[in-house]
Image (cartoon, rainbow, N blue to C red; front, side):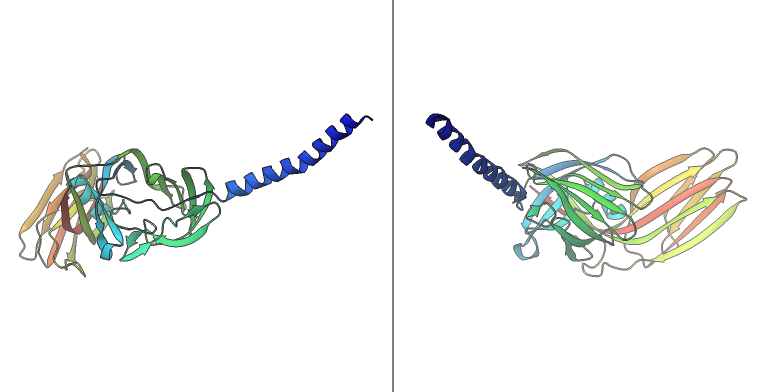
Length: 318
């Protein structure tokens, strides 16, 4: 073997382990990829569609209205429609309206910041939080340069699957599925931007009454009542917000409802006849009144759902 061949083989042998080290270093570098918490600015916005069992394809624009909440440690995430703000207050289907902390974009539930996100986001990072009054265990299952996919599970079999997109500084998807594989919330981002200009709102809600009635037999009358008290921290409600669904079968089916205040003054009356359907109706009732009485009469096949929440409205002009 001549000297040139020997030199060539030596160079090749020496290069092989160096190449292997380079590949290993790349793998280690990739495994340390992470997403840091973004900084939001007033006027940043995200347009989402929300789908729930109560209301399908509800579109809402979320807007950053303030960055000085909680002694300059939180943002205020609002909504560009007062109607949609009221819908959130009575249905609680958007957990990310209201205060969001600077450090982890944590949403507040019952006055406590809950780290649905835990920055920096890294593959296999895990943590716990509470949302929808359910305890969750979360883990980052994948991450690339701008997308982190997170799975969270609960003891009752419910699941959260959500994606944080660092390019838009918020969720691109957020899906909550219960143990029966029903999607309680599907949140899909369709647009985002900066520099929003206009009026925005947040309605602080409080549950006051909720029930469902179904009738398949002879005529029936139901009477129920509920007591209205102020918000535990913020005082009197500005208004009460109601949400209702009604459905009557054929034949002689019908529903009538009357809601009276503590002076027996009627504040809401509705009647549905055979074949009538009303879904997702939202409205308001004057406040205050200490006690309300709901009277319902049913004939034939009928279904009725009624929810009432108190609302305190805040608004900002950006």
